[in-house]
Image 1 (tube, rainbow over the protein chains, first blue to last red):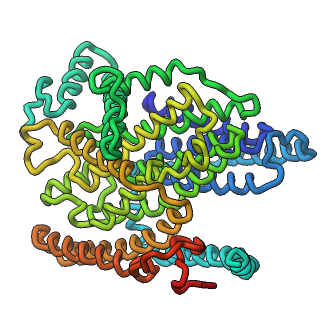
Image 2: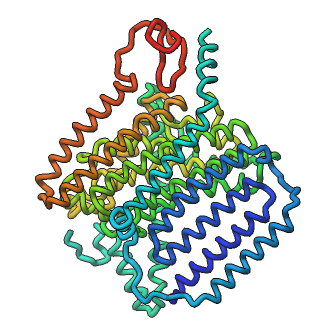
Image 3: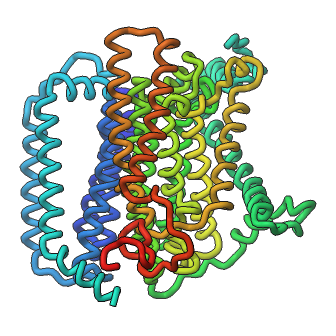
Length: 177
Length: 418
């Protein structure tokens, strides 16, 4: 964090991240909120890259900006309130209060903690180190997480198919007639 | 490669830039100035090359497709219609950019920019020659995928902001396609990365030139799958069904006109160039050509290969009919993805055996190549048979019901409810 480029990059990314995150709460249009959320994710990715965690940064773009945000968009489009304006809300004051309290608490913790600064050099290539750690030392948690996600996916499919399966065949036979 | 490392050694344009950097430092500028200057020069160079290539290829594409369709194609503007691309560009610049009243103004304005930026940024990691790469990230392959995934947001923004049902349907189709084929793309690239053991584009090219083999000779299945997935990702025919004009007028850019439409058009071209560049880099040896790169500039070899791959896309557009959306989806989820799973397993095993036994590359790679070719052809044929695509059709039957994804049942043929 010494040379000018890193400092400029850090502040640019920090302003982008925090500013977009604020806008997510401030805009009254859900779709705009998602777009600002994507900008915020991109800012976080940039912060990772300034910390020379290039693999995590790129994966952040791939997973959060590319995939998670699409999930959020699908969820919003499926709600009846996906329309243009969502101006009325009764949760404004409690929301602001809670967000303020959480922000205060986190900043207090961040400032007051005696951070343990490591003196070792940064990784040159984090991707290889992460890959080796995942498939060697931490293979069991990795596989368990994979199995868990598979189960979740299958569960979702089964829940959706439970009702739909029968009506589909009926529909097809009607077309046949 | 015997590099003179003088600025006039144009086999590597990096020499000229390096000389310029030294010169700037000699003038007593601070450390960061040469980097900024060389970065700007490289970006401007890549952009100019892209714009010129695009204008030329608009003409080539229209003329070639004209030839393939037994018609003439544009031949009025300039000799042989050569200035058609220029005329198109001027037209797009000068046309009125209409914004309908009920559009979401901010998103409508932001979407063309959001789709244009990723298409350009990808070129940062594509090596044009040895050392001629804007930023040789050690996660270059992943960077290409990550930047490509931002497209979905831009496409959705365009479709949603237009406040037009065709635009929204087109955008949703496009998102579905992007998500489905992103997995195939990831797996195809993963098998390359596993074998090479690096995600750096430069390392992958060096591996191919070091072993005197192009990657597609070893991994045919990944190559073909990546081309197909890429075709879908850049939304070109035969997979351009998110802008199928007979169904959706123009898909997610229905409401766009003038330069805003121009951005979508240019972004599609740039993305296709980027895709061709990645295919050349990962599967076709990048800037190398079995030693010819010592005499011919590497970037010329790279660009020639890139144009050849781009021609393949033009060819596909001129020959193949547009697919139906369910056909395209089922092809990804039911066909390509399963083949990719097997491919990953086999490549992983081969790589493991190679590393553990420390075999010589020249003996082991031909064997892997033969195994993978046999496997690729066998898997495609068998899997197609299993899904019922391989059985010969009974002639002269009228299609009565298009019901199950990817299949057409004929009158009299066995099928549910027949």
